[in-house]
Image (cartoon, one colour):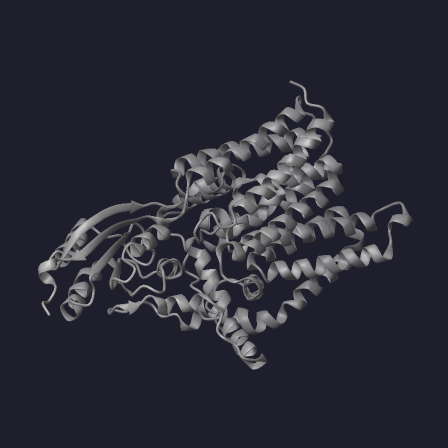
Length: 555
């Protein structure tokens, strides 16, 4: 089968349109993920008001109020909110910029799922635009379209394009700063002085400085790209290295106020031993290698399916991807595309190797954390290498290969959004709405704020709902103590048993039986169901108990 150049251009435009449509169509199709609701809490400036659940029930609506902006009657109130917002970030491991963007977006459009995710989608569309610009500069118009289409339909980036975290915008800043630097280098090395326009150079210089500073203030690991850019400059335009050094230093200077005030406090609060390695040196090296392969497999093939797939499958997919990338590099070298190969390598695999080396030296495991999201900045460079291979690798049936890859990506995405829903807390809300005025106690074996706050966000605030959240081992004795004191207060109890409580261990069968024994003294089981989301953090077993008729006091 032969596909013409004109046809493949139309296919690429359709692929880009599909990428845009999927994002817009799924803005509110899934509930907030665990970390997304934390982003919402941080964006409201009320994180300091959050308190972990105690050993007595709390009215659930008290948590709901933390997920919206405070009432403000003037500019002084606005400044107070902003101050609380910044102070709420000092216990977080990330810089302020992403949360500041979300804060002002929240002021404009509210805290609905679609509203909160819309700015993330805009960043992802901007990333696709930057991919087109960078690809066009290096590979021509069709190369730009292909790069944009691959990024737009890449399953991993699509997931993060609908995730209220900083990883989508981080990719945007990586692409914009890389594109700006390449443009500046090509301007400075151009043999045509007419193309070396002063205003154009100022424009790209300003973009480089601002995007580099923004990247660093979005995610601290962006700092690795300053080294990447240094190597890129030395390779492409070493005679004027000092100019680029001044530009990048200027970007760093912009970040100094936050580094001085915020980063220092974050370092004092940081759990630096969180990712430390344990075990023998050989075991650590094997794990480092596995994490390296996992990242490649997740980034370039399986995407968010990695959250439910067995680790072996993810690793095997990474092996195939790594072999594929090596083959891409080999074919480009054979076709005298060394310059494009090195540029793609420096923007993709090189920073991944740097992070791997840093992990080995510091004896930590970070690159595969969160299914590879901590190194998502290597994704554009890896996709650029793939794009360069498809354009310049001299392969037969090039257009068929392009179409096949796009179809694979699109199929993975369609399967993801059609087969994996995330509506667990809507189901709990439906149970509440069956008897909206009945005093209800929700008991849960998790105190993690991602669970507590999602309950508060999705359950109706007009219903009398209280929450008793304890670790699995403490749930039954604390429940018994509270029911002895307030046994007549709750006509219905919802028992949510989390399969992964995050801050504690899952309930054992004995602990479940102890809770059941306490409940059956005055309550009878009405229904049970299992709620399943997109990964284990979303999974709950829900048991609905109602007060026994003979336990209701006579009046």
